[in-house]
Length: 231
Length: 231
DNA sequence: AGGGAACGTCACAGGTTCGTCACGGGCTGG
DNA sequence: CCAGCCCGTGACGAACCTGTGACGTTCCCT
Image 1: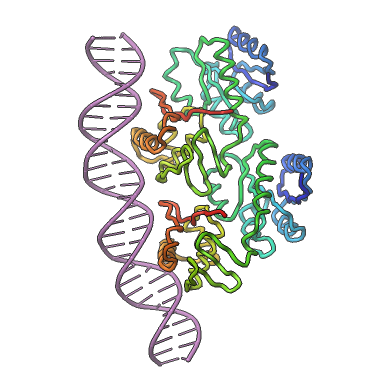
Image 2: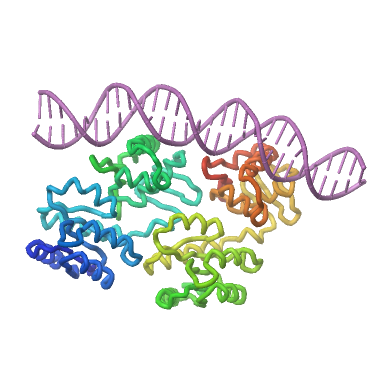
């Protein structure tokens, strides 16, 4: 269904071949790398549309690869799915903070894999957010020029922080945002604020959004996510 | 679809050629410049309908180019799209304050590019404010030729600054204006004035406008906005 | 089912922002 | 030179915003 190119990074031959098999069968062009260094080089050279990255790699681990990807201009916005073992689940927070777009826990089913891949590719094709004057996500509309927000057609009166919080959640819709990430994005850099404060503002925002409140989903143990409603 | 002329300013040959290619394909006449000085000269000489300006330029950077464009009569109202590297969220604010109309972050897609170009050309084709002799927004009327203002049919006696402030707010109606932006627009270039002074003038203006005062909305923590009452 | 951790909600104090008043300096026209 | 109007600024109270502790509720794991 698609001719997108996907870079798969894993040092275990078994897993690698399973991934390649399923993705190829779905019609994706697949490139592989077996360590961090190779991943970085290939990402840079081939400019894939998506990267699937195992956390456990010999030498440079997945976090470091991800961090370096995010640091380089030409790869900073590439969608990345992290691949983790079940026992590494606690690590998810760390992964999201470094900039992962999604997670898959081993063992995974073929269906789960392709679902996530499709979702992420679809999203990255959506119109970019940062420069849009007017943003619409389901019943929620943001007029960034006027600095106004609407929910189901009616204007909602948001404070500065609430507005900014909504803006960030919309901009990264579909992706979980940890409390720390939200703090960093909404409150200016390293503010000395309790992460629980984020909860409070999410609650206030939800109240004001009315029916649309449920679009802000709580991801237990991690943070919050605005449900992606891509066409 | 259009025979508009676009000036593209970028010093990187790769990006420049990509831009030229896509824009030409859409039917635009494209002119190029590779540095700030050339951009200013060409903008002056060719009077393009739109300028796409990279922020990072050798010598004079994009901000300075933009500032000079805005300073010169013949180029002051040209629509400008800034081209920036990802990452710099802060730069966006700076850019808008200097007078950018839109932003595109690198890397960008062809679709994003043409969408923004079209949107901006469409917008600038709407009746330009600067040449209207008489402006009517709801109950407020500005006779720019006679330099007189009316609210609900009765003339209101405004001082020079009050008139200019109202003019700027009307010109950018619907959009939030920060105190700094208002200072820049109303008080000519970098006056050393407290931003709180703006509040005072808004207050005076509101008093004189009578019932229409509520059309000037306060956006807490940001600035002011004249409510948009389109036709 | 029980217990604990994570999350939602409430209330409130402190801080910030804004509207307004008052005042003085500066400019202008007579 | 004077009166009158503009205009910038400090002061202050009111309204609003916001961070936090406390407590209730939900969820998950064992």
